Amino acid sequence: MPTSELASLLEHSDTAGRSVIRDAAVSAGLMWKCRNPACGQHNLRAEGLCGNCGWDRQGRPLSDDQPGLYVAPDELWEQLREEIAEHLRREALEPLPDAVTFPWVSGSDTSPWSLTELVLHRGGTTMIHQTALGGTEIEETLDEIALAVEPSYLEALRIMLPR
Ligand SMILES: [Zn+2]
Image (cartoon, rainbow, N blue to C red; front, side):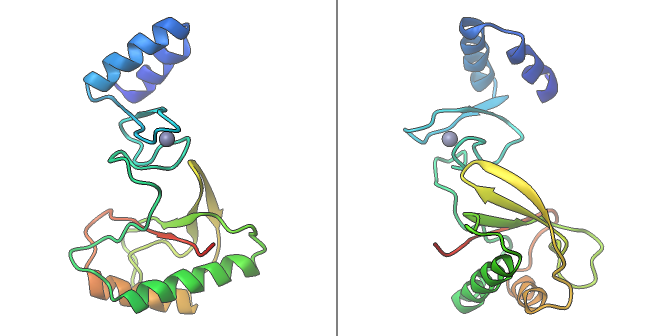
């Protein structure tokens, strides 16, 4: 069943029906239930993170997601964390989001991740943020990380921001 049909089915059910449909959808692998004890939201299969609290489907709180076959040196990773936090502060995005995802972009000459469209995470809430990172130190750091980790096709990069 396409997830849009499942969403529509849930939308048109009463509370009791919804709970039965959700349980069946989890059993069938169409949905997953958030393992955060304080949450327990049902999420559609396509969602990698809980839409309510941001935990992943393995039950881990929102965290760094390093793509690639290899691990980037910690210094590089921490450098990116500081640089992107600083960049967002300059864009007056305070309080800072919990994390930023750099989506994969194909056909890029330099960074395999987007330099213009970021995903900002605040708990389980995400929003697209348009920006311009071309020619910045962040682009250089992303290039260095890409060289170090060798990301696979479609692998996004997610980094938590300092509190
Ligand atoms: Zn959750």
